[in-house]
Length: 159
Image (cartoon, rainbow, N blue to C red; front, side, top):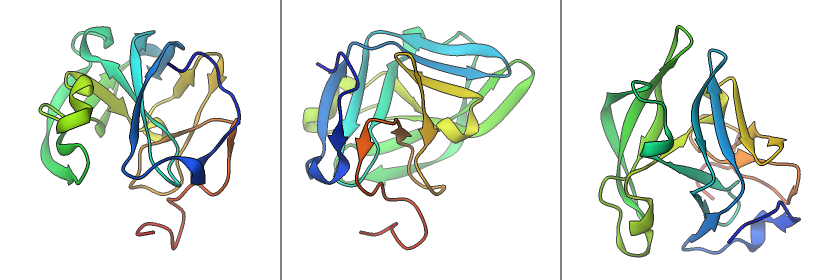
């Protein structure tokens, strides 16, 4: 269980990825409104990635999510569906995703949502405001405790 943001080296995260409970408060803000707020989150940590945080659907503001077109497939978690996020008069297309029927060890994140922090006004882990994982493909949340090279920038997508 993650209860504080201790120093972590992203190259030391495992592959296949690890799923961990998060006791820290996770919060997502769009259009000046809080769209998600929980202390019952999960995170997925994979080599060279910033952790991806998952928030229970019941801790997302009612009406903030609309199903979006398309899906993707993760070799570890299975088929992902996407969501448009709306709050404070703003809509961000495909700004959140979920795994309705995740595979094996990722079953606990069924019914949870992850948010692309770069499409939100703010995302928080505890008292720490996150920055987006580099690039436009991965959805990890970068916090100052992370050390090492976080993939996502030019030339790092497939390694």
